[in-house]
Image (tube, rainbow, N blue to C red; front, top):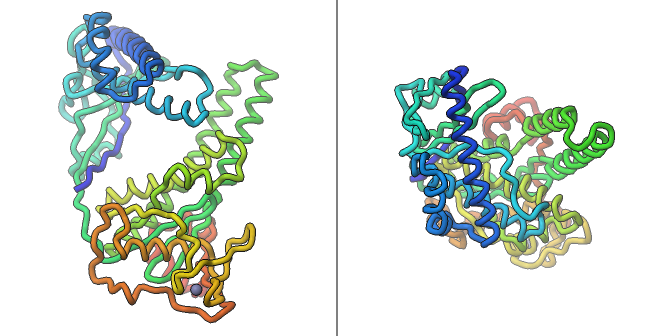
Length: 433
Ligand SMILES: [Zn+2]
């Protein structure tokens, strides 16, 4: 069983003045708590919630006796999460300041601090007793309710001071069964493409993630520099333009699209998805040529980690099993002969030192992930069902012939929903195979 969680945002109607003022007070107290806790946690290198709570909960209770006690509890959760990710960035040399800024807060609520009140309102505990807040349900909200998702006991809230509204983040939960796989679908993720192997055929999806990340980075930098000179560092116009840029970037985000295609393809065949286990070393090797530390981190997050996370999330939704395989040397050994493949500098095609056949690097990687998964090298690798190890081999090719993937440009696949259906359409119009 896996637990799938989706967050849904709803807005309250315009709040009555009294409630609005009450929530401002509450948010200010909560923010103060989180600020103090984060500074303390970072100063003492505390990453764990239990530890932070053990050390600071009483003090927070003493400082804010009027608040329901569980706010001190959730503030510790909130702060330890912030401290943890800040300390991680700091370790990587990516933190810009000494302490993290607590700029925006959303208040974390646990089951003692709120409860649903029918379908269109919630009750919340505050320093002046319980208040009821009506919200405006939308189509997406009803979709979760009607499809049998249940509300999780945690929620978050944020005040929209300009519109005098409360934004409520509700979490919906569903338990999903994971099926026993009938085969494997290996996925090799790179900074500019994602390659999958489906029943012996490799498909390479071009993503151009690196170019997108770099483009965004430099555009952002240019805007910042230009507007800082003309309007000063905190100008409104600059913020507005940066916001637009961020929104565009989100639209271009192809992670979910690729994850969707891969997971549906695995689901249709009842296969498990095979991913590389990403260690820290692997990462720095993969994009070592990028000198800027921050940029390297961003590219890694957007391409490798980001795409893997999206695939894992989607897989939970469909009950598709995911296994992780040690990627060491996956593109070095010939899947047919087991001998080293020689790549000349900078080329993605190499030659097998025994058979003399040529291999696309990413095709090699997917084959080797598959063979390792079949041998059970993965963490918690389920035993293969109905797969005979001996049938699963790439077709040997003559010397000088190439094992190449079918390359799918982004413009082609970006609107696909599943490999099967859309590939068939392509075959009909005679574009490939
Ligand atoms: Zn070979």
